[in-house]
Image (cartoon, rainbow, N blue to C red):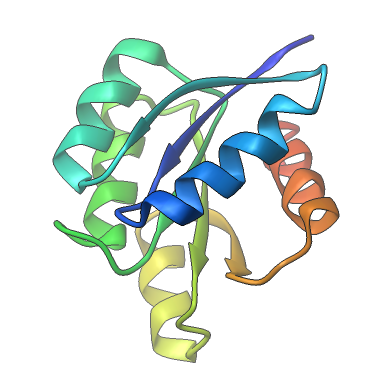
Length: 122
């Protein structure tokens, strides 16, 4: 089974790094990318990805993006990815529907494991 993944981050370097990680995996497919909460919701409404990797601090806000994604595509698992490893940021994303929280700088293996676990309902 191929897992469809959306990347949502306003930093092109982060998006490029995540795309490279996804492109090397046979069971993952990049379903699209967005830079704002509004773009993310629109993309997920159309693409219905299995997983969306969402930056916490971006235009429109990561928590708002997570809420909108879950609203338009309830089966999409949201993973928060951020440099902000504070408890309040984690709680905001969790309350918005994120199922996992990764700090930027996580290894490719950690990101891939989180994507697969999230898609599996973990």
